[in-house]
Image 1 (cartoon, rainbow, N blue to C red):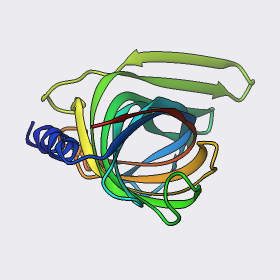
Image 2: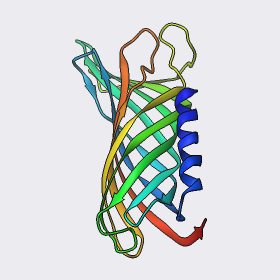
Image 3: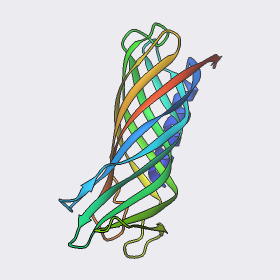
Amino acid sequence: MKKQSVIIFLMLSVAMTAQKVNFAVEAGFGLSNVHTNETSGISNASGFNAGISTRIQLNKKLWFQSGLFYSPKGAQKTISTENSTINTRRVINYFELPANIVYYFDGEKAGGLFVSTGMYVALAAGGHTLKTVTGTDKKIEKYRKDIAFGQNVNQVQRFDYGLSVGLGYQSPLGIYIKGEYQIGLHNVVNTKYLYNRSVQLMIGYVIKHRVTL
C-alpha cells in the first residue's frame, strides 16, 4: 500500500500546481516475459493493452502523466519430451496506475519527440494458465486453470510495482505513438524468484478539450 500512497500523493501535489490538463486514449500491443532463475525454455507472451491517460502540464515542455491501463503480463515455457511437446502459458491481467514525467523536446502543442520515465503500481484482476500438449500423432489437448492469488506457497500476489522508460513521437494533431519498457521490482510469486518485464507499443490520441486549473 505504501507504493500506491506515494503515487496518489504525487498526483495530488502535481495537480495543485498544474497549468493545464488533457486526456488521451491509448491502445496497443505488448510483449511480456519474466526475470527468473530458470534459464531455459521461457519465451515472450503477447497481449492487447488499452487505457486512458491523464497529463498535467508543469511547464512548456514538461508534463506529469498518469491514468488507468489494462495490461496483461506473463510468459510461456515449452518442454519437449519423447512423446509430446508441452507449452505452458501463464497470463496475469493487471490494471495499472502509472506516474511518469514526460518531456517534449519541442513542446506538446508543436509535436515532435518525447521521452518519459517514472514508476507504476498494478493490481491483478485475474489470470490463468493454459497448458497445450501436442502428441507425436499431432493430437492436441488443452488444459486451462485459473491462477490462485494469495500468500500461500506458489500462489501469486495481486500487487506489482516497478519502473518504466519510454520514447515516442506526437504529431501536431494530437496523434502519437510510443514505446515503453517496464521493469517489475516486486516478486510476484511466493517462494519463487519471478519479476515481470514488458515492452509495449502504443498508439494514442490526445482529446483536444483542455481544462485550465
